[in-house]
Length: 378
Ligand SMILES: [Zn+2]
Image: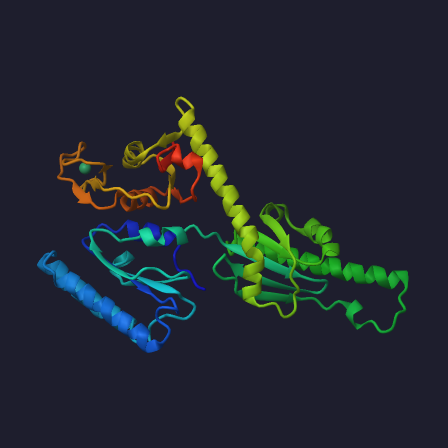
């Protein structure tokens, strides 16, 4: 499955402050839209609802004209021949997206279809998809290697490496000690090449975390060849044969390693949050009101928010300040916008200040902060 959502994409969407944004979500779950005609009628229904929202009289004249033009572009992008459904379980469409263009994102998981016209992009349904790290799974044997780059949604093959090892062409069972040594030498040279390739891809930013697959007997030798930086990214070994292994099998084998890593990261963030909140003068705030204040002060490093949390709130259209039930901005006196969900605005403001956003599963540490808290920079 493909996933076009990243924290960078959400950051760009959240930064949009130039008029209304239309957010469209199209479910492509094969159990709900099994055929192309079913998909087309879902697209038509969504566009019909979007047109009604745009024509509904909420928008200024210029804005309405702009949105109608955007809708026309969306229509073109979703025509049967053009719609990017390959490998996607849902689409999220934003108009205007970053740089005033229409942004079409492919999602790896189904999503409830909906149409939202608001002053900012409706990114809440995408948040859980944004914290995907970049992973490499390298399958290595004595003379070949294949590299898969991706995450828990998909792990496509990105490259292979083959070294001609003389031992493969050996005939019969005769082998002198000297010949054996030369084979081992070739394997070690092959491992050098694998280690070089992994180091290069790490420097390129192709991956952040590494999983290796290979025979038990080769593991310590290969690990010994890895550069220090690469070894630091190694999260685990899995059992996979190099030949005939599908991208899906690689994804499935790596998934438990990725899940363990994710659980450790969440534990770490929750521990730092608990410590920051519990220490006098510490770098942590707990609860919605204090978290919104810290976000408004632009001092959040990591926003931690429970997946199910919802609450109304208010936002200053002039300076971006967030509050719970404010009629007027305490900073500049502007009339506050009243929002159905302040959580999205909080996440948007977190992205704007380059904070990390973490959405852990249910945890006592999260309950202790009323479902939302932040690790602060100062
Ligand atoms: Zn203000």
